[in-house]
Length: 197
Image (cartoon, rainbow, N blue to C red; front, side):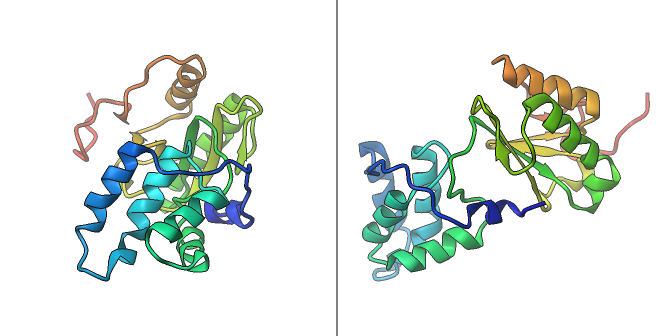
């Protein structure tokens, strides 16, 4: 299994020229103002996130160059940050970016079974994007919701207290563009103890 960041070892460039949208350029000014004068390079992570969101979930070479230019950094310095953090993608990802936690609490509660369900429903292997570009499925380290294990993150939302069945339903609903409810799939409030009724 490749670490999510390791699927990003080669920068894929689709030759699309990246330019900040007007809305994001205004956000950049606000972000940079949060840092002391001359320390604008500290804004690299928020700008990478902004660019990745604007670029449909991934960073091509042109986006990284634009961030370097915006922050007066060398390209390699920005690339070092991109390749260090697994939250940045150097390859296109599907509409639904499914991150399955595989750390001990989730694994003990069945995350390996969730990986099998994900492969079955999406039709793609771990670390790969489905042919219809609807899903990219990766296994990741702790996402910090251990009390509600097993859990996954899909795009920006957490889905917790998963079983093979409710995870299969969740993915099938995504596949057919039905709405899904984030959070605990058994109605647990935050990390309250599970109650047997």
